[in-house]
Length: 376
Figure (cartoon, rainbow, N blue to C red):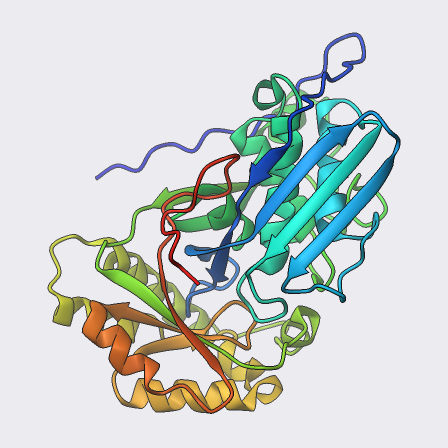
């Protein structure tokens, strides 16, 4: 089956005269999902949206200033000013849309654990950008879905979490050289120079904890797929967080061709194991166990999360498709059918949280209820 040609993300449209955005006065509610990145072999590429959502309400005010309220996860720990990641994303979105409102009132009800590898940073970024677009009249015509993904990636630093947070389902994300820059090179209107770090040139800075930046003259793309409806994810959430920069700092700069080829094969198998409709429960579970093996990141990070690594070894020894969620330390297990999920949940170590999450078919959207309101 031929895959659709991805559309080229568009730049925010700027008219010859400066655009002055018109802001909606009604509050906007957005509900970004949790996400799991990498999924074993798909380092910095694969992502899955999970039905556990934060709830964010944003309103433009005539009175200058910023008010931020946070309940739930991160309350008392995250900043309540311009340093809040969601506010930074709002500001970046409004800049792309033509200008800032006089004042903002922001309320966050957080359910996604922070610092656990379940995409809380990407949820904040995608919620902020989506809210900004919804609060500007005709915002979607200025900042379309592809441009929104690219802007989210420039804030986050890599696209594996922001893609499923925006699109829902299973996503495969990648960076590609900007077609406009390539055209400029061919026509002699753009300068050819090596890619460099964007620090100091980007209108937005990357999320806290991210050590990557999108290389210059590249854009983020994502392909969305629907996983099998019999798929669920069992999340084992440890009591202590792990900073993303710590986990990413343990990765080597170079890997062997053998290990790279191994992961390429497993990533291809994982795509089929997650999406092929004709597989029996048993066959899908066997393929997922094989497909979630990895040689590029999990072993290198194990020293920073020994309890997570030990749990993964126990689960995999008994046939479960277990892997580190994102940069960790949460452990995720692909479960095929409710019986498999219940059996996996029995492995939870003392003091850890365990929850069964369905796949979120919708990504971040404004004023839409979640797929499953009973999800904890």
